[in-house]
Image (tube, rainbow, N blue to C red; front, side):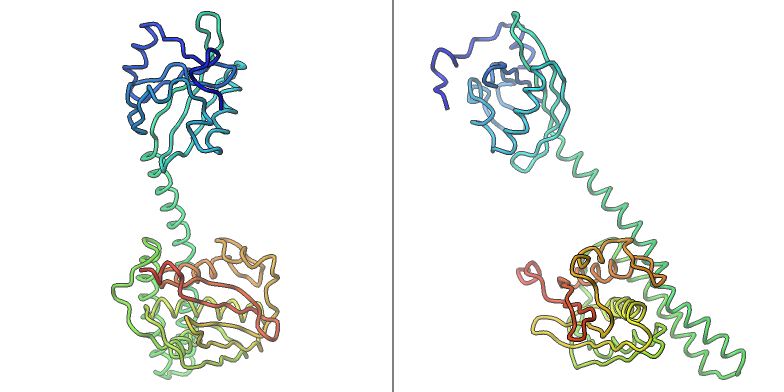
Amino acid sequence: MCDSESPSNRVSPPDGGHQALVDNFPNGVVVLVDSDLRYRIVGPAVLPFSGRDATEMVGRDVFELFPEPTAERLASALEATLDGTAQSFDVEFEGKFHHIETEPARIDGDPYSVLVTQDVTEARETAKALEEQNERLDQFASMVSHDLRGPLNVAEGRLALFRETDDAEHLAAVDDALERIDELTADLTGLARSNRSDEEYERVSLDTVARSAWEMIDTREAALVTEECSVVGSESQLQALFENLFRNAVGHGGSDVTVRVGPLEDGFYVEDTGVGIPPEREEEVFEHGFTTGYSGTGTGLTIVRRIAASHGFDVALGESQEGGARFEFRASESADEE
């Protein structure tokens, strides 16, 4: 970089009118010369959200003052402004977001870029939080529709059988299905509001939960094989996780698919003997709304990942020995740190 004290880079003192403007501007104003993008007038004396003294910035260029990505973004916008095109954009610097507006100007016949900045961190974070909340609400609506379908189908089917046979055993199954609907409503509401809440978690037998989940879906001629395994979590939420994985396995793998549930050193796995998922689509399958057919809604694996995250598990998708899908749930590093 050139020495800021050299004649070509010496800063000319601004006239009183310009200085009065910047000294009283609440967010900070910078005027730069066109040839080297050096700050010529900076104000107020202490910039309100960066805490920098204006005197430390005058005479220095953007690449001396900011990290390269930020400096490059500023330089591009300022050069366009000096060519006569105003700019409006955000930059992130030192953990804060700044909205920047630039306008071309001429002072004593020389071209300048007048740059006005404003700290918009709170506004951007609020907007992001609202966007995430709306996304959760949208997913919640899909989750409710998706996961309630299983126990509703069970209840309807058993009620029809009771009317045909007058066997009270079917009413007990209807009662179980309605209780499951009540549990799911509470669980999915909690998941929609937060990504993690482990205050009421307890040691849960996954093989027992898996078999309860198996009873809640249409398994056709499929088979379930489980090994003893336990984790700390919510029994009802983990049952919802299994229900979605099993529904997905039977839907894609066919009526005679075999599904296995077993332990890992730091978690558990669920795999099947079906057709599997192409490697290039492994990440897509977790996206809300993604579906490959069989009347799926593209919601099940979104629910699986959300429940896993709420229990401190990362989900990895691989392939079983038979070429089917294998989901591995392992304790995440962030959960270990907690």
